[in-house]
Length: 150
Image 1 (spheres, helix red, strand yellow):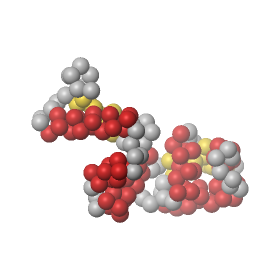
Image 2 (cartoon, rainbow, N blue to C red):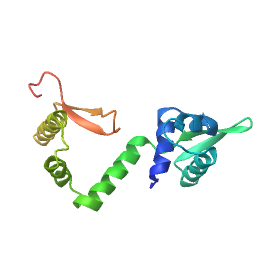
Image 3 (spheres, rainbow, N blue to C red):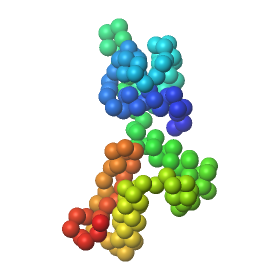
């Protein structure tokens, strides 16, 4: 499902806490965006029409909640980016960030752990577990603690 950048800002609010009334979404965005209430309501309506959120009647107002899971949206966006810019491959993306010094020491350490987990999995390694990266909502295979891997 394609959602615009502005719609994704509204979705972020609903992914963090829901259900919310339109006024609560406006209040949550007030510190981040200089949007009028009408703008937020337009974005909510677009998201409703796309099936990304649903609205339940609560007295004289509606409460909005996401139907689109953040994890699914991140996966779609990631695959779209890779397809558009890197022929669907992850290695050229990492190489690009490496060449432009966009990888921190922590990023490199995480990449090493990911590659070790992939190697273990390819070797029939039952010594991996899957965790969710809280920043992106994506699943990451990690070597199990105590197996000698970083």
